[in-house]
Length: 192
Image 1 (spheres, rainbow, N blue to C red):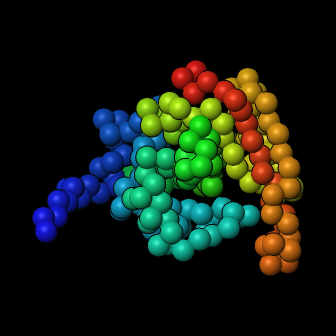
Image 2: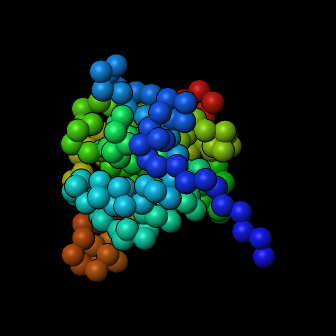
């Protein structure tokens, strides 16, 4: 059995314009958006922990996202390689025109920069997403920041936004607010 391995590239080296998909922010404090790498799992975990009310998953789950789902996820780093933003999701196997967005996290240092929108649009503008024309996510009724983000995306993409209850409090064990399924689309991915 021959195993091929890609060369290890530290996060700080990945935070360079030549590797990043996009450079955003101010010239004095640029942020670099790129696909995650195996080295990012722990940093993503730490970022999500610092972003309540997001549900924190295991560090292993974030490592899987950074490797197995890297084409449909993105991280944003500062010049030092610190992860300050993250979006995760996947194209649904039973609906290949739909991207399901699992989590968006923006750390305190990058809040107010429009980074959440830029992370989502960075993923949606990748060649792998050319056949995607709908975005789905779940949001608790009281998460005003997430509702605002997805309303802005629907407006920018000139697409309808619909929602309905998806998971009830009972289905979530009685200790979690219900989750609404939010669907944006159809939209033209090539115009994002």
